Image (cartoon, rainbow, N blue to C red):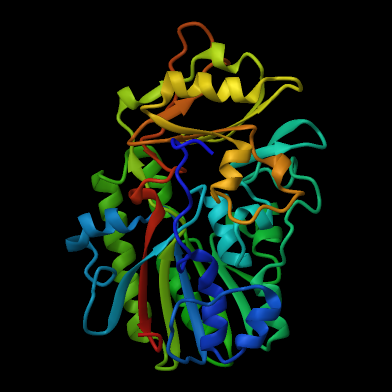
Length: 387
């Protein structure tokens, strides 16, 4: 492994620990179950009857800290709750991170290796966020969800999210085993979570996609993003205030985001893509699959020579050895690109070969996928019975 390839962070609590830790707090799981399941629960939570896990798409710990004055409940470190940080995983992208949360496994184990990935059977790149209905083959997800496990442990799993996701293939797979409750606004989702935890023993997953959507279009430093954060913060304070005393609330995120300046949104040199048959992942975490017979070592060297100051570049073997994807199942390894390019700083790498002459590329402002602190660290806000 070359010195230019960073290793994965030391073992520490991350998104994979969230749901197992909740199941332990609910008294449904214990050390024996964790050991037999190969899971970890490294987030210490006080006992509770039910739990609400709020997943705020795209809310990084750094961005929250920078806008703490607009999110007094979320940023609180004293009083009615506890504010900490948690690691996401790699890649820092929704498809991979949500699956890590719901399965308790790393991408190298559950199989969702990025925003998109190489499908060896068809020899194509498949979209792992929106392509489950038409592109992703059956059996792609290699790990059961913890919602399925929760049912067997006597816990009622409930997902609360926008109606547009109710019947999606990703919901059926990544959120499989839970009862889906549609609620299109943040206030309505909070109401649904309160209702779901009123009686019995429930594990509620409440999804908030609004900040991520605004961030991609306008950036997290925009007024629109801040206004959405303020609305969310007020509703989470209401969730905390109105939840029963024996209901724990945990708020986290799948990844953070950083704003990419126009000059840093660059087009990949097409000469480097001559032998590439598949470009997968986000612009900040590209995975390239190459044609059989391609000299991967030489291609890695060429990418490093061109972009080594703007990105980490690794072969698949180097990335796996460095632990980027966690423990990698042999069935998952071919889904990872032969060459992996991970942006440093605020750079983003775009494949513009399909653009027509004089066509202006459409770029996102807020982006994620790489290994910067802004992308890796997410909030961990505990409230209610958990605090």
